[in-house]
Image 1 (cartoon, helix red, strand yellow):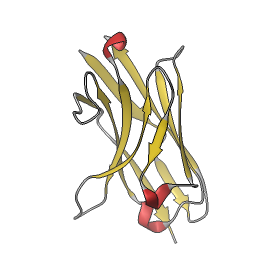
Image 2 (tube, helix red, strand yellow):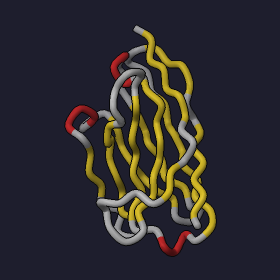
Image 3 (cartoon, one colour):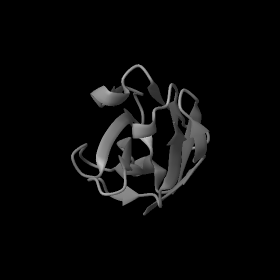
Amino acid sequence: QVQLVESGGGLVQAGGSLRLACAASGRIFSILAMHWFRQAPGKEREFVGYISWTGGSTSYTNSVKGRFTISRDNGKNTVYLQMNSLKPEDTAVYYCAASKTTMAKYDYWGQGTQVTVSS
């Protein structure tokens, strides 16, 4: 089992920045990649990006490219989502998820952290 705990959400003005963290514990060695998702009120959950656990390669959805950066600190078993130039449309609950054997399957989820961007 892997446990994921997000932190760092809050209220920020448009144009501001926030850094979310996702701390992993448990069977860390089984993680293939870590993903970030978000879900705004009344909308479906949206993929934000991912980082491979070992190689560190990343990928992002188009709407956040150039503004969001995912990084990892393997020593702390923590993945970060640095969000810059935030927009009101970035308001959502942000979740991290972990994949074990395939990138297409999300085996573990965190509880989510609220990000609110005011205009």
